[in-house]
Image 1 (cartoon, protein in one colour):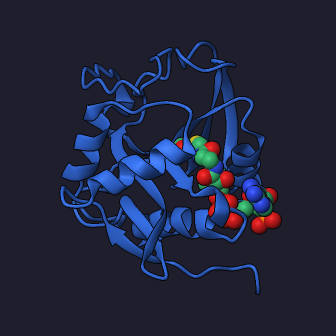
Image 2 (image 1 turned 90 degrees about the horizontal axis):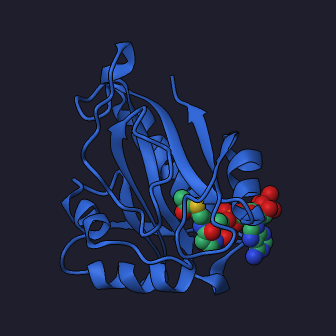
Length: 188
Ligand code: ACO
């Protein structure tokens, strides 16, 4: 298809993390905390965190992590504060989810399937490694998206079959509207 731009993937590490800051600055209205950049740098391989390269240049990035399934979805505030104080109780205690922290494609390259290739590669990573220790308890893939971000909501629900969860009010501190949806898709 003519509009497709086939990208290559590359891992994100301490040597190229500044590139990720640039992509995020260009793509998102919020700033991410240092804990997010640390999570990305610490992630193993390029299964969950990756750059998309076209013609040798970074044109987008996707960053996900594994976390408890019921990690609190309540108002966490923007800057995507990452807390590690999960106290999940009950039978779902061991279940986990892949949480998409960021997915961004530089504006000039949007609508050319790069976002889809990035998400598909995360889903493929899960399919290919679902019995590995890292992924064996993962049952869902999840993200939060600002309620006004129609492009991204359509992208996830129509192209990838994510379901729309409840509105989480005042999830973001510094952007208007401050509310988000949780989007999720069962993986097994
Ligand atoms: N031009 C054409 N189609 C667009 C455009 C655009 N500018 N923007 C969104 N779309 C829609 C279309 O419906 C299209 O579907 P189709 O293939 O059926 O026509 C689909 O989205 C495009 O799919 P891709 O080309 O694979 O997506 P793209 O590479 O444009 O990436 C993304 C989508 C990542 C949402 C991009 O628009 C972006 O970076 N937006 C800014 C950052 C953002 O909002 N990220 C998601 C926030 S949620 C989170 O990060 C967890």
